[in-house]
Amino acid sequence: MKLFDTHAHYNDEQFDEDREEIISKIYEDGIENVVVVGDNIENSKKVIKIANTHDFIYAAVRNTSK
Image (cartoon, rainbow, N blue to C red; front, top):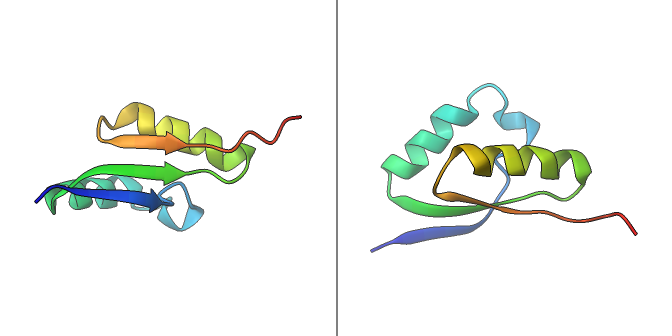
């Protein structure tokens, strides 16, 4: 079975110490795709960086500019 996590926050500062380890582990455990969600400009920038460095992670960002 292919697993797709549709809403994650690996951009959160609680993951700053071990983000890469956790991302590697979830992939090894069978999560084949992940959507990481940004809810403000700064978090969205982190989300894009994470998605750009992991082929199986997608970014969902919020545009707060009007």
